[in-house]
Length: 345
Image (tube, rainbow, N blue to C red; front, side, top):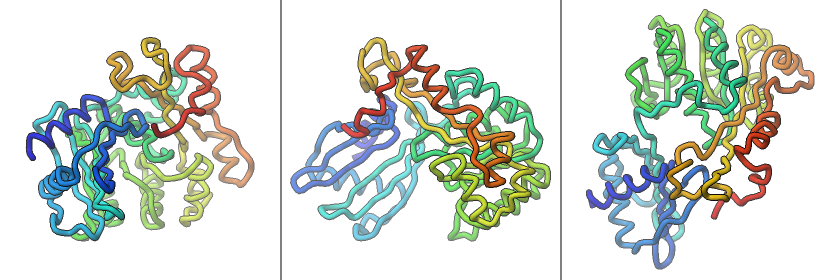
């Protein structure tokens, strides 16, 4: 199955897919790719072939091949693909048979800060934020909204400016030799809390925390920002204001947050209009807009609006997604009707 599995991965990379799904049915297993945020049916295969393919991936990722009754997770780094790719596996015991999901994380592919948004106002604002010596910058948004891409663009920019960066991630998604990356391993006692403590003693200028999940991580992140570090992190929240509220729910004092929070962003990816395909979204086989078929839209909560939010007053965003949409429509980058389209095909 070595050659078959490699062909599958290379096909997904060629189409810039972010996920591969093997979905079992009664008589066959369906293969799906998630491309530009949408689930695309690719083909179907026999149940026996799918089981062999799943067992091969589980074996290479160090998972238990014989265990099909419990969910499992694993990872694998493929260096012989172009580009090298980190694969994260997740199995789930479905009603019919075991289902497999594979997240593809291409390595050594970095977005420049200037390319994360089509509007220079947003990129200029982010560039000025990264000049700060201390404080906290929080990225929020739903799964698949590009938070990790934005975060690594920030880190790549800071590394180019000579900053000493230490990251605490679970897991390390994109390997970058320009800064120190540590990975959470709870079985070995390497929790977010322990790694953050050690990282603060390692003389970093910038501390990247993969995600704030609990009270301890939030407290350590606030402490790092208060003691003269620039902290970059992500949170799961529906809006920028929701992230602020969640920090307060996790026990962070409003007085501390007013002192350290530089900005909180909420982002989404909007599909771009392709002049060649004449459709929305762009075809998965289009070579013109394949890699830039979506652009990021940001809600940025900062300055006076952020302080009003921390004080419990109604607030607005400084650079809103609505304003970016209007500008995008006027430039012909994407169509106003894109939200009317189904998320799945």
